[in-house]
Image (cartoon, rainbow, N blue to C red):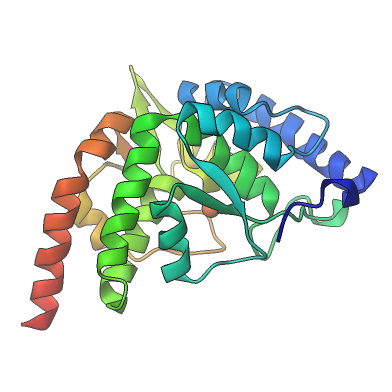
Length: 243
Ligand SMILES: [Fe+2]
């Protein structure tokens, strides 16, 4: 399942270009600086779909991670296995021009534009690998997988980060969404809470709608340093169910 770069049509590249340019304006002052820097370091360009082989060369030098092509949504066990091996699963297809605003499942604009730039950030990828190892240890236990998926969801997909006095976006689900990148920071509707492992374990997540709550981290180092606590709190949560 390799990226067949020559098969992308002019429309495919144009869709990338429209979404990329829109989001780069939209994310100014909203996305975290580490993400914006990652866009540069990954070598993304405004008018063409990134070539995974080129991006992977850059990532290899920076953190040793790579994009790993998958046909679509990946089963939990395979998903966490790939992440534990520093491979980020990404689809190669991009939405049609008629689907710019709405998508049934994540395409490469989400997977690549949303996720790949932060794969250059060491504490971030170490966190990603750390939680994937924990998930893999308990992969036969559906409740453990659910709790670790909540953690992934409220950090990697929908996380916010405090930068000096204001809040910024680092979650890929927000970064790749034109509507949610404004809503997550500026709407009075959702709750914005400090990062808290237990609170996240207690929060089922909703798909296909904007979130009703977001968790704010102080730094990517905070995420990385929480790995041991996550493992301990997961064991406690699992023991409660067994009792
Ligand atoms: Fe995602």
